Amino acid sequence: MNVHDFLYYIILPILSISSLMVFIRFFKGPSIVDRVVALDLLITIGIGIIAIYSIISNKPTFLDISLVLALIAFLGTVAFAYYLEKRNKND
Amino acid sequence: MIDILVYITSGLGALFVLLAAIGTLRMPDQYLRISVNTKAATLGVGLLLIAAALFFLETSVTTRVLAVIIFILITAPVGAHLIGRTSYFIGNKLWKDSYIDDLKGKYNKTTHDLKGLDKTEENEEEVESKS
Picture 1 (cartoon, rainbow over the protein chains, first blue to last red):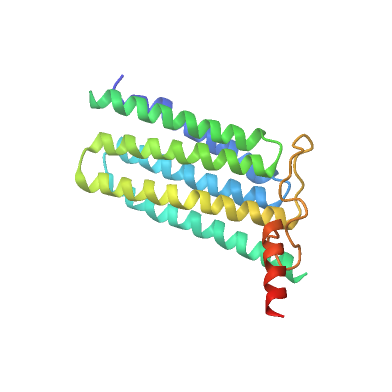
Picture 2: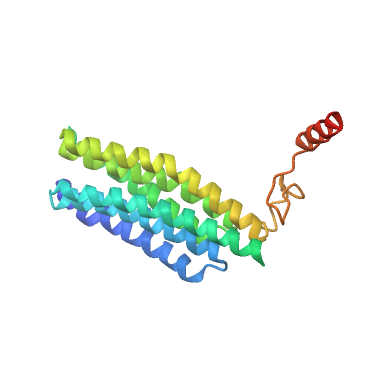
């Protein structure tokens, strides 16, 4: 069992199962804060999947996309927090 | 030798990400979920990226991986703090078994200011000295 098989048959299924669990929370979440947190964690797991996929396909160019995804996750969380607080304030 | 390090770091990273996902699904409260996400996911994704850096062993890949890790380490606590603050203002209740609420009665619900005891006393003294 070399590195490729280990990553392909053990690590990627674990990451897929964990992203599926977070997606269940994304649908169930009682309040909107739960959905924002689940979306943040989903994008963060996506960064990990991109890192593993760049090892499997032997192309380190994919790591650039993970930088962009980290930026988008932070901006999304900050924007949701800002506007949810504003909405509560104006009522 | 490098392969063993890649096994260890990627395995630990996947384990921490799995723990974060289980915590997100099973924790009873928003604040506990935010705590689990920030701690476990940051460490897990950092270890997965370190596995990629160890596998390639090039300068360009290592600098990219370090940039992503530092960015995640800086922004994850800030985002968690912001969303937890918003959740407190919206009025989400704590879990029924967590009975310590240090912020109870200290946040002004309309102006969103944090009123500590010391700060109000100082303000009153300043007002008195000015008048």
